[in-house]
Length: 420
Ligand SMILES: [Zn+2]
Image 1: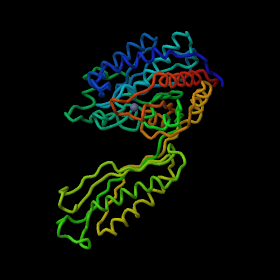
Image 2: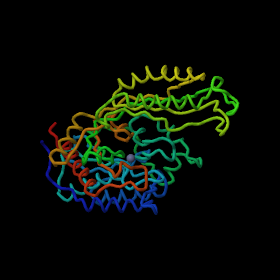
Image 3: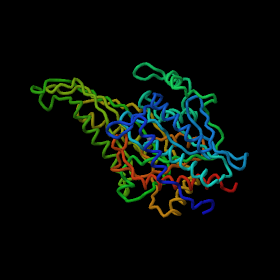
Image 4: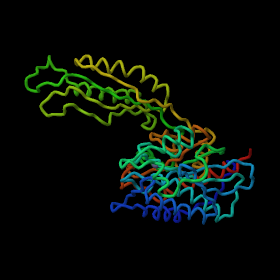
C-alpha cells in the first residue's frame, strides 16, 4: 500500500470543530438550521475561511459561491486532489450532514500542517454551495453548475418562497466569487459523508466504501375513475381511482422486492411518497388520484427492465378496476459509478487502519455524484445513529467521525503522492 502515512489525525480537534460549527444555526433541539445563502450560511463560511487560512490554505470563491481552500504541493505541475462536502443544512437538519465532510477535510489540512508534510500534488478542500436544495428547490446546486450539468444563469434566476433569487441571495451574503464556476483540471475528488441509512450501524462496520450512486426513474401518475356516492354505488358500478392507486403502490413494492437480493444494501428501491386524492371527501368514491412513483437501483439494466415491465402491468391493474392510468416519465438518470482507483484507495485505507468496512452504493444524491461525471471521484460513508438524517436528532459517535476522517486523510494523501 504505497503512500499511506501511519499519521493519526487529531480526533478531539475534529470533534471541537464540528461542535463549534454546529453552534452557527444551532437549534434548541440540538440540530442545525443553516439554510443556504442565509446569514447563518455566511457565518459558517466566514468561520470556514478563517480556519482554512489558519491552516495555511488560500481560499478562493467562484461565481456560484463554491469555496476552494488550497494547500500547495511540492510539484507545481500536478493537478490538485479535491476533498469536501457542504456546510448548508435542512431547516431541521443535524450537525453532521455535510459538515462532517468539510470539517474532516479541515482536519486533514490541519494534520498536514502539524506534520509539516508537503504532498506532491496540491490539495483543495471544497465547500459546495446549496447541496440541500431546500430553499430554491435544486439540490446539489453548486456542484451541478461546476460540473456543467445546469446552466449558471438559469440556476441564479431560481427563486425561494419569498421571491428572492439565488443570484441576489448570494450577493446578499457577499459570496459571489471572482472566478467563474466551471470544472477545472483536477486529479480526483473524495467526499466523506454520513451514510444517512441504517446498514453500517446494523452490521457493526465503521466505513462504507461507496462504489457509486443508483440509477433512477421517476414517474407522474394520474388515475382517472369517477367520483360517486359512497353509499349508493354498488361494487359493479364503481370506478374507484384510489383503489387503483393502492394496487399500483403494492405493485411498486413488488417490483422493489422482486430483485431478491441477499444484501439490503444492494437491493433496489421503489417508493410512492405522495398522493393527491380528488375530491378527498370521506363519503365520495375518489374519481381521480395523482401521485409520484420513483424507482432506484444500482443496475441500469434493472431500471431498463422496470421501465419496460412496470407501465403495462400498472395499466392492466387500472383497467381491471374500470379506471385509466396515465403514466408520464419525469426523468431517468443512469447509475453513476465512482472511479475504481479512487474507490480502491478508500478500501486500502480502511483495511490498513483495521476498520471493518463494506462496499456499498449510495442511495442518496451527493455533490460527489455530480463531480464524478467530470473527474475521478470516490466517497466514504460513516455510520449515523439509527440511520437518521435530515433530522435534528442526527447523531454520530466521535470515534466514528474520527475513523472516517482518518480514512479520508490516508486516501487523499496517497492520491496526492501517487507516482505518475
Ligand atoms: Zn449532505
